[in-house]
Image (cartoon, rainbow, N blue to C red; front, side, top):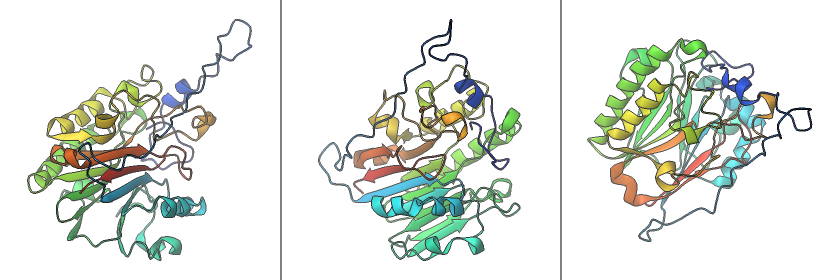
Length: 313
């Protein structure tokens, strides 16, 4: 994960942010190069029907909020109420349930709310799922203690699909957790395969990997950076090979500059020096129901932006 200011040790501080924002090539400096033009991502009109004309029936939004208490103070809930998804998934809440802001706990729009947090570290990790309609069942974790103690997974079962919200472990500065991340990838892939054998699933959240070079601004300088190592990229590729699809790239295979995370440092967001780390991954069986997969890059309130999925399901 690119470098962040004053983050918990779950967030890797990497060389990427410095390399991405290297100040050496300033316009007007003698012998220097022209400053690279800033190209922002434009989120096109929402597609509300499938290819064969079926109207969407389900809208899901996902957002790594980088601390739910700070996010509320930054008016994150105003965006949620404007977007009005049927289901809202949050990652990196960094908050025990007992300490949740009243503004979130009391949201009448979402009467069914589910929380998971780290068992060992206060203010670390954490995910949430807020639903307008009650799921058939809700479970926490993937059934492996090594992974489940950090509060990273909530799974909700609905009539025709599972929804999994995930905050995938970061390999950390110096890749000190890369071995653990690889174990996680294997175990999580097996968990998802088990669900998919029962009914198709939607996976959303901060998956802490930029899969392809198009998914980050400066791939050449980040090949040894957490989130873009060959091992992490191969792990994500192995998941897709098991019968899942990256919904955004399914619809927009060649769309550049589409990022969901920017370090707070060095005006990275203003320059759109970012990474696409947040995904909606679908079972292939759900592809006929896919209407659109959106990146709401203009929404502020975190170092990530929200993403939204439309499904005719």
